Amino acid sequence: MSARVLVTLKVYPVDIEVDLDDLAKRIAEGLPKEYKLLDYKKEPIAFGLNALMTLISIPEETVGGTEDLEERVKRVDGVSEVEVLFVRRVS
Figure 1 (cartoon, rainbow, N blue to C red):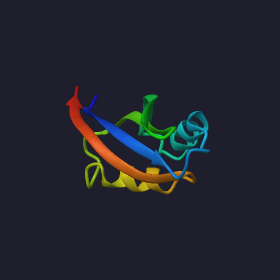
Figure 2: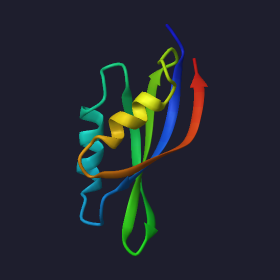
Figure 3: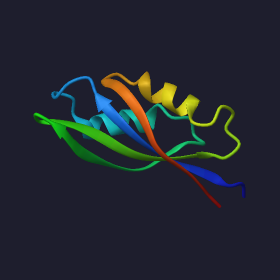
Figure 4: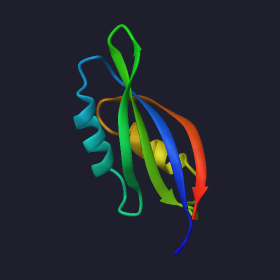
């Protein structure tokens, strides 16, 4: 079994009206089968706006590192920005 990489992404919604549970579901559905959304939680930002903290597992051999993951998440309707917070290898 090959090693995996765990990526913690902070996903900013386009506005306060975005349902973050639904957004997490749409992010998971938009990922290829070898990527897995393992967990997510809401993190308050300011003035009622919350970000979505996601933990996503990707194959270690993914070409371009986290770039493909970031682009896929950015394309999900309701996502404004994506920030990579942590990247760590697990076996």
